[in-house]
Amino acid sequence: MKLSYSPFDLKLKHTFTISRSSRDISPVVLVELEHEGIVGYGEAAPTRRYGETIETVMAFLGSLDLSGYPSPFDLENILNDVDAKAPGNTSAKAAVDIALHDWIGKRLSIPLHQYWGLDKSKTPLTSFTIGIDRREIIEQKVREAEEYPILKVKLGGSNDEEIIRTIRGVTKKTIRVDANEGWKTRETAVERIKWLEQEGVEFVEQPMPAEDLAGTAWVRERVNLPLVADENSLRLHDVPKLQGVFDGINIKLMKCTGLREGMRMIATAKACGLRIMAGCMIETSVAISAAAQLSPLIDWADLDGAILTTNDPFDGVRIEKGRMILPDRPGIGVVRRG
Ligand code: MG
Image 1 (cartoon, protein in one colour):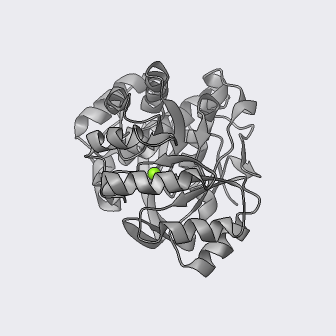
Image 2 (image 1 turned 120 degrees about the vertical axis):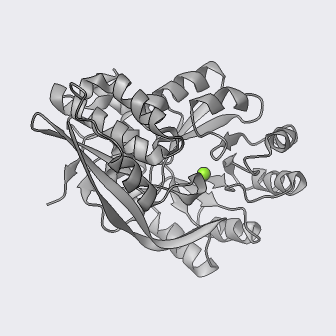
């Protein structure tokens, strides 16, 4: 089994701003895992929020030696060893996980959703993300997003009300709000969420800083909108702690080390009575298509990472009017664009 990897700069259609950062280019690392002539694709989209950069991903992948394992079918042993190699490095670990799953699907000539027994007609609608921006740009972005029935709006700054009013001036479609830990006091969070309740918002993601679980529970008792954990929902062991604090969790392959642990988080969340969203970073169709393969199991999707870019080197899951269409291809379902 041979692992190769290289950095790739994903270019964004618009400068992307959330409550803690702003950027035009989003670097990822593309991975190929070759064994017996079959190549599985993987991807790492590192974020500084979780202590990763392109350099840490390259260093982690460079520290791995998969030559001693009999085949990618040894996935459980391989991924346990990869996870034990060093703490953190979750996007680098996810790249290996995705590539192994892609290889297995290709070897068996079936898409992963079929391997898991999932109904591809049950993929949820994905939201389309509107970052924090000036009024004119937000109006333009909302118009460009006309075909998408659900918007995910980044708040948590000083002009939340202006952003929502601007969007509501253009469209009445469903809005999901992501505060990205931006509201620093419980009182601010309650006040903003109560206002959002009247603006046709479906739920609020990560209203409070991740370290303030008690504050989040306090907020939840005082508002009606469901609260969804993102920065609080990193890996499997986080899920049980969120019962009674949040109403749902956002699973991202780049936070949870990939599809294997993502599936376990889905099962655990269901057991805890938590609803489930699958989200993403800015990613190519490799990581997006991988997450889309398990999306028939989830309630909400936010898998727009690839459609926010202009130079995706892969063709994979297609998104038509927000509906995710899983391709009839084996594994994660991607091919390199000509
Ligand atoms: Mg989020």
